[in-house]
Length: 240
View (cartoon, rainbow, N blue to C red):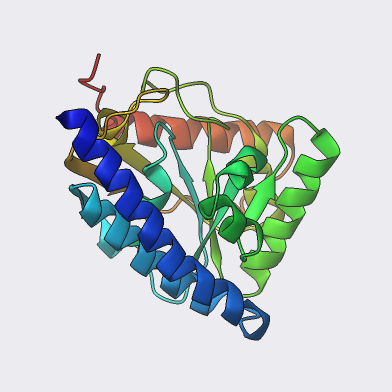
Protein backbone atom coordinates (compact mmCIF):
# COMPACT_ATOMS: atom_id res chain seq x y z
CA UNK A 1 0.00 0.00 0.00
CA UNK A 2 2.82 2.39 0.88
CA UNK A 3 4.40 1.68 -2.50
CA UNK A 4 1.15 2.57 -4.31
CA UNK A 5 0.78 5.81 -2.32
CA UNK A 6 4.39 6.78 -3.10
CA UNK A 7 3.83 6.05 -6.78
CA UNK A 8 0.72 8.25 -6.80
CA UNK A 9 2.70 11.03 -5.13
CA UNK A 10 5.43 10.76 -7.75
CA UNK A 11 2.91 10.95 -10.61
CA UNK A 12 1.16 13.95 -9.07
CA UNK A 13 4.51 15.65 -8.44
CA UNK A 14 5.45 15.15 -12.10
CA UNK A 15 2.18 16.77 -13.17
CA UNK A 16 2.87 19.70 -10.81
CA UNK A 17 6.40 20.01 -12.23
CA UNK A 18 4.96 20.24 -15.73
CA UNK A 19 2.38 22.81 -14.62
CA UNK A 20 5.02 25.07 -13.09
CA UNK A 21 7.93 24.24 -15.38
CA UNK A 22 6.45 24.91 -18.83
CA UNK A 23 5.34 28.52 -18.19
CA UNK A 24 8.62 29.17 -16.41
CA UNK A 25 10.58 28.13 -19.50
CA UNK A 26 8.33 30.22 -21.75
CA UNK A 27 8.85 33.31 -19.58
CA UNK A 28 12.60 32.76 -19.14
CA UNK A 29 13.65 35.04 -22.09
CA UNK A 30 11.89 37.94 -20.31
CA UNK A 31 13.31 37.11 -16.90
CA UNK A 32 16.94 38.23 -16.99
CA UNK A 33 17.41 38.36 -13.22
CA UNK A 34 15.59 35.11 -12.56
CA UNK A 35 12.99 36.52 -10.18
CA UNK A 36 10.01 35.06 -12.07
CA UNK A 37 11.77 31.70 -12.27
CA UNK A 38 12.39 31.72 -8.53
CA UNK A 39 8.80 32.74 -7.76
CA UNK A 40 7.49 29.82 -9.82
CA UNK A 41 10.14 27.61 -8.21
CA UNK A 42 8.95 28.48 -4.70
CA UNK A 43 5.37 27.74 -5.72
CA UNK A 44 6.43 24.41 -7.22
CA UNK A 45 8.41 23.49 -4.11
CA UNK A 46 5.48 24.18 -1.79
CA UNK A 47 3.08 22.15 -3.93
CA UNK A 48 5.43 19.17 -4.28
CA UNK A 49 6.14 19.12 -0.55
CA UNK A 50 2.40 19.27 0.16
CA UNK A 51 1.77 16.39 -2.26
CA UNK A 52 4.37 14.33 -0.41
CA UNK A 53 3.00 15.19 3.02
CA UNK A 54 6.14 17.08 4.02
CA UNK A 55 6.08 20.23 6.15
CA UNK A 56 9.00 22.65 6.42
CA UNK A 57 9.76 24.24 9.77
CA UNK A 58 12.27 27.10 9.85
CA UNK A 59 14.18 28.47 12.84
CA UNK A 60 16.30 31.61 12.76
CA UNK A 61 14.58 33.64 10.04
CA UNK A 62 15.25 36.81 12.05
CA UNK A 63 18.96 36.38 11.26
CA UNK A 64 18.36 37.10 7.55
CA UNK A 65 18.58 40.83 6.85
CA UNK A 66 16.39 41.97 3.92
CA UNK A 67 18.35 43.38 1.00
CA UNK A 68 21.59 41.59 1.90
CA UNK A 69 23.01 38.89 -0.37
CA UNK A 70 24.29 35.78 1.39
CA UNK A 71 26.06 32.55 0.64
CA UNK A 72 24.02 29.82 2.30
CA UNK A 73 26.05 26.70 3.04
CA UNK A 74 24.22 23.55 4.12
CA UNK A 75 24.47 19.81 4.56
CA UNK A 76 22.84 17.60 1.93
CA UNK A 77 21.06 14.28 2.45
CA UNK A 78 18.00 14.10 0.20
CA UNK A 79 16.36 15.18 -3.06
CA UNK A 80 13.92 17.06 -0.82
CA UNK A 81 16.65 19.46 0.34
CA UNK A 82 16.27 21.72 -2.71
CA UNK A 83 12.47 22.16 -2.51
CA UNK A 84 12.68 22.55 1.29
CA UNK A 85 15.15 25.43 0.97
CA UNK A 86 13.22 27.02 -1.89
CA UNK A 87 9.98 26.88 0.08
CA UNK A 88 11.38 27.83 3.46
CA UNK A 89 13.95 30.59 2.84
CA UNK A 90 12.38 33.98 1.92
CA UNK A 91 15.33 35.12 -0.18
CA UNK A 92 16.30 35.23 -3.84
CA UNK A 93 18.38 32.07 -3.54
CA UNK A 94 20.18 30.66 -6.59
CA UNK A 95 21.09 27.02 -6.05
CA UNK A 96 24.44 25.57 -7.10
CA UNK A 97 23.57 21.99 -8.06
CA UNK A 98 25.46 19.02 -9.48
CA UNK A 99 25.21 18.50 -13.23
CA UNK A 100 23.76 15.00 -12.84
CA UNK A 101 20.42 16.50 -11.76
CA UNK A 102 19.89 17.77 -15.31
CA UNK A 103 19.28 14.16 -16.38
CA UNK A 104 16.04 14.03 -14.37
CA UNK A 105 13.12 14.44 -16.83
CA UNK A 106 11.30 17.80 -16.66
CA UNK A 107 12.80 18.86 -13.29
CA UNK A 108 16.35 18.66 -14.63
CA UNK A 109 15.46 20.31 -17.91
CA UNK A 110 13.94 23.29 -16.11
CA UNK A 111 16.98 23.56 -13.84
CA UNK A 112 19.29 23.58 -16.85
CA UNK A 113 17.57 26.58 -18.44
CA UNK A 114 17.01 28.54 -15.23
CA UNK A 115 19.15 31.07 -13.34
CA UNK A 116 20.61 28.45 -11.02
CA UNK A 117 24.21 27.28 -11.37
CA UNK A 118 25.31 23.81 -12.46
CA UNK A 119 28.62 22.37 -11.30
CA UNK A 120 30.56 19.50 -12.85
CA UNK A 121 32.42 17.96 -9.93
CA UNK A 122 34.55 15.75 -12.22
CA UNK A 123 36.21 18.68 -14.02
CA UNK A 124 38.07 21.19 -11.87
CA UNK A 125 38.06 23.92 -14.54
CA UNK A 126 34.30 23.59 -15.01
CA UNK A 127 33.80 23.65 -11.24
CA UNK A 128 35.81 26.87 -10.94
CA UNK A 129 33.79 28.43 -13.76
CA UNK A 130 30.60 27.52 -11.90
CA UNK A 131 31.85 29.34 -8.82
CA UNK A 132 32.62 32.39 -10.96
CA UNK A 133 29.08 32.26 -12.33
CA UNK A 134 27.72 32.00 -8.79
CA UNK A 135 29.74 35.13 -7.94
CA UNK A 136 28.07 36.90 -10.87
CA UNK A 137 24.65 35.92 -9.54
CA UNK A 138 25.54 37.53 -6.22
CA UNK A 139 26.69 40.73 -7.93
CA UNK A 140 23.31 40.93 -9.67
CA UNK A 141 21.32 40.91 -6.45
CA UNK A 142 20.86 37.26 -5.51
CA UNK A 143 22.03 34.93 -2.78
CA UNK A 144 23.37 31.46 -3.53
CA UNK A 145 23.12 28.06 -1.86
CA UNK A 146 25.92 25.52 -1.92
CA UNK A 147 25.91 22.05 -0.41
CA UNK A 148 29.14 21.86 1.55
CA UNK A 149 29.58 18.09 1.17
CA UNK A 150 29.39 18.28 -2.63
CA UNK A 151 26.85 15.47 -2.93
CA UNK A 152 24.13 13.74 -0.94
CA UNK A 153 25.15 11.79 2.13
CA UNK A 154 24.82 8.03 1.73
CA UNK A 155 23.60 7.48 5.30
CA UNK A 156 22.19 10.90 6.23
CA UNK A 157 25.11 11.75 8.48
CA UNK A 158 27.45 14.69 7.99
CA UNK A 159 30.27 14.14 5.51
CA UNK A 160 33.57 16.06 5.15
CA UNK A 161 33.08 19.54 3.73
CA UNK A 162 34.73 20.77 0.53
CA UNK A 163 36.38 24.17 0.09
CA UNK A 164 34.43 25.42 -2.95
CA UNK A 165 31.77 27.37 -1.05
CA UNK A 166 34.36 29.03 1.13
CA UNK A 167 36.55 29.97 -1.82
CA UNK A 168 33.51 31.68 -3.35
CA UNK A 169 32.77 33.49 -0.09
CA UNK A 170 36.34 34.75 0.22
CA UNK A 171 36.24 36.06 -3.35
CA UNK A 172 32.94 37.92 -3.00
CA UNK A 173 33.26 39.13 0.61
CA UNK A 174 29.62 38.12 1.13
CA UNK A 175 28.63 36.73 4.53
CA UNK A 176 28.06 33.01 4.90
CA UNK A 177 24.92 31.70 6.58
CA UNK A 178 25.33 28.16 7.96
CA UNK A 179 22.11 26.29 7.20
CA UNK A 180 21.36 22.97 8.88
CA UNK A 181 18.81 20.67 7.23
CA UNK A 182 17.30 18.06 9.54
CA UNK A 183 14.84 15.30 8.69
CA UNK A 184 15.17 15.24 4.90
CA UNK A 185 17.01 11.91 4.87
CA UNK A 186 14.20 10.36 6.89
CA UNK A 187 11.67 11.58 4.34
CA UNK A 188 13.44 9.69 1.52
CA UNK A 189 16.84 8.08 2.06
CA UNK A 190 19.24 8.00 -0.89
CA UNK A 191 18.56 5.00 -3.11
CA UNK A 192 15.14 4.27 -1.56
CA UNK A 193 11.77 4.52 -3.29
CA UNK A 194 9.30 5.13 -0.47
CA UNK A 195 8.46 8.67 0.63
CA UNK A 196 7.82 9.12 4.34
CA UNK A 197 5.65 12.15 5.22
CA UNK A 198 6.87 14.31 8.08
CA UNK A 199 8.82 17.43 8.95
CA UNK A 200 11.99 18.89 7.46
CA UNK A 201 13.61 21.44 9.73
CA UNK A 202 15.83 24.28 8.52
CA UNK A 203 18.01 25.95 11.14
CA UNK A 204 19.57 29.30 10.18
CA UNK A 205 22.66 30.42 12.08
CA UNK A 206 23.91 33.99 12.31
CA UNK A 207 25.94 35.20 9.29
CA UNK A 208 29.70 34.80 9.34
CA UNK A 209 31.63 37.72 7.76
CA UNK A 210 34.11 36.83 5.01
CA UNK A 211 35.84 40.18 4.48
CA UNK A 212 38.32 39.71 7.31
CA UNK A 213 40.99 37.72 5.47
CA UNK A 214 42.01 35.84 2.34
CA UNK A 215 43.96 32.83 1.13
CA UNK A 216 43.76 29.09 1.68
CA UNK A 217 44.12 29.19 5.46
CA UNK A 218 41.32 31.74 5.77
CA UNK A 219 39.05 29.57 3.62
CA UNK A 220 39.81 26.54 5.79
CA UNK A 221 39.04 28.62 8.88
CA UNK A 222 35.66 29.60 7.38
CA UNK A 223 34.96 25.98 6.53
CA UNK A 224 35.67 24.87 10.09
CA UNK A 225 33.45 27.61 11.56
CA UNK A 226 30.55 26.71 9.28
CA UNK A 227 30.99 22.98 9.94
CA UNK A 228 30.90 23.66 13.68
CA UNK A 229 27.73 25.77 13.36
CA UNK A 230 25.95 23.11 11.28
CA UNK A 231 27.10 20.31 13.57
CA UNK A 232 25.74 22.21 16.57
CA UNK A 233 22.15 21.96 15.25
CA UNK A 234 22.41 18.71 13.30
CA UNK A 235 20.19 15.78 14.29
CA UNK A 236 21.16 12.25 13.35
CA UNK A 237 18.66 10.51 11.04
CA UNK A 238 16.36 7.94 12.63
CA UNK A 239 15.73 5.96 9.43
CA UNK A 240 17.75 2.75 9.12
